[in-house]
Image (cartoon, rainbow, N blue to C red; front, side):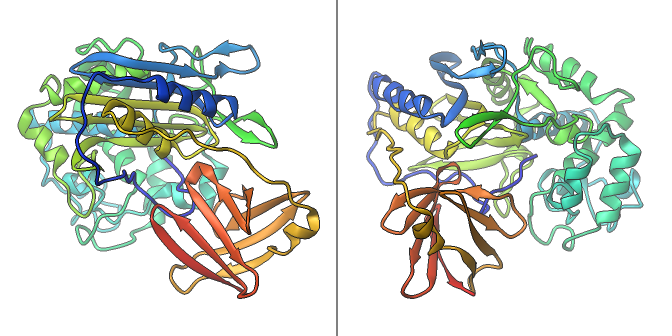
Length: 439
């Protein structure tokens, strides 16, 4: 349940260094996170575990700023799309029990969905259905805080139609997992929340993992950093994301979940292999991520101001969890720092220095820029002494001036370099470099 910012990127980790594994020293990681905390770049919980044992854990910031209640390792946060791993495990468990089949057509449940007779349960799990992603539409922002039910959500999904022929490619869609939620409820004659509790949370003793409700109770709130302070984010009604993003959990519960999943405590090893099977970048409810020559499996998540990651390295028996309820930085950099620290590689302390420009200096960059490389238009405006980037179809983004005609949006790892003489702006993000011309 996440709205992508700027270029749609998955995690991309640095490769090319030699293996170094020794007794872990997390002192530099602590310095790194001290800097992140002092500069209001991150609030949340971080965890590293080996073979089920927690070897590093850190909490930064508050779960409720107004009350002054600080985050702890037991704080409960919304985990967003990591929920899809739970939903997939339930589906595959139902397949093992003969209640569902991966080849079963969606038309058995929702014939009104376009191409339903061509879409299988497997297509839904692997984002190959072609069903339009309802969270991509502007109208989503008009109802995401309001309670929904099966009828209202299916109606929205049906009305949005299809983006491509089923099984012709992979493309992320939360609609797939909302439909899977209702299918699970139908075949089990039980609420999704009860299925999570009875089949995953209770057996694995995940005492702080459940399907969220509104309003929040005894959970962390989420924040956005605006004009020098953390501002409370509105809350999504959890009946909207359902099995696509409605689970609440803790870092230690997520450790037990993914270790239990890979140990065969929820589904069989054969079913786990189906989750890990990657096609066009998508597994079934799971992604594969690179770290140097290694690989790990897991999922990211984002809902309201919450951002999350869970990952498991099968060969190294290593688990990493990041749960954030306030982010003003590129969370991918934090993940890399954690992994570098564990594997004994250099961790560079980030610099958050900025320069102050006059209104006249900022006015040089104001205007509309488009590119022949991608269908994205940037409009830059000045608000006081801050340059605001307005990417088409996305939220307004304040940029930090770094000097030498360069600006940064650290939360997305994006650098904007202006060439005033040529009337150009170059966006650098995730290894990509895209040139935009001033219109």
